[in-house]
Length: 220
Length: 223
Image 1 (cartoon, chains in turn brown, cyan):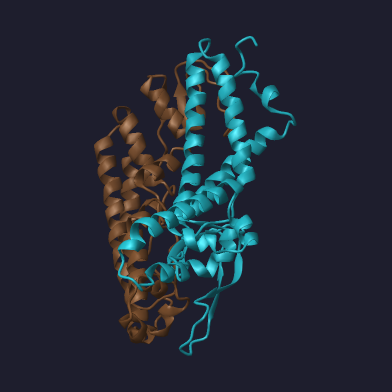
Image 2: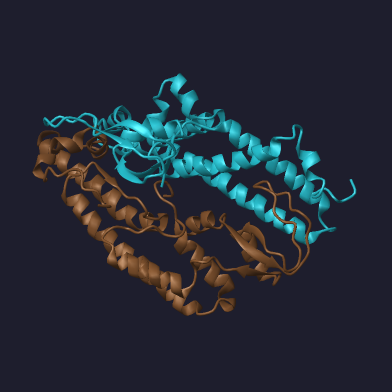
């Protein structure tokens, strides 16, 4: 089922709308795109284009990429160190850092120096962040929270966590309301599984089972 | 036509000279609407005007690309790629809505006509009714006869159909400052409702029901 989340491919699709700068090797007049004009392109003159177009032109060997500043060994090392030293999530250079670095490395890898190091570093950063995220989710689910601030967490990270978190909480809601309403459950029929989980406020009634620390902020 | 349609595009497309920015805005809006539809547990109000308008733009553009083909193959190719991307977003958005209708058929069918008009486009309403009728027919003809008699499962199923889980958690990013967002409306065990202010551009995890109104009014992005 596609509702409730985005697939990694769809996230990549969204990230491909990001503008990047290329140095074209061919000449084209202005493109009147529905999403906004692109070009005109003159050889050796940098021009901003959406990432998907850059990838496509690259496949036809019609451009080189001006690699974004943050996508290099030094800045990534710094990011990794900051992430390591910070108890909260640090701000990433773009909210699509994973997708963009992946697309760029895949298509332009051979013109980027140290591309293997860069690939490893972005992976390291993601791993660090996912580990933090898992710890926060654990705290979030164990306290009966109703709200959390999740600033700076990027979409890939949210998506990797969504099934675990939202479905898990849905199940917990069901269990909690099942705990308070033993009687109706005994008469289980087809519709019970839906009524239990859609009963407004049902999660709250039994939440005294859990600690009352409700406002743990994932981010503080 | 001299085969230069792609370059004379703006005159072709623009009946008013603001329509270029409008298409851009429409596309940006589509992205938001698509995203919210994908993440929301229930059907959001339809945007049939926006969809029709964009489809029309895409069709006009496809016509132009078709005419210019042959003269400038690469330019056509680039335009086609963009059109395909837009078509993908549009159809994924619409398909996602149909999926929800298939999932919660009975629920949406039981809404008042007014509400149906608010949430469903005319075409979607036709789809819903057809789908519901066919499902009914199937159950009555091929399932009901084989159930033990007196088992009111089908009636019970109708009385209490699957409904969207409005209590599920979502990630939201407000587009503006939202004051007085009530968390956990309906608290019963003595704790008072909690009211928070959500900052513009912040990211929060909370129950969909707390921000439902804001999602409908397009004041927050789901993520």
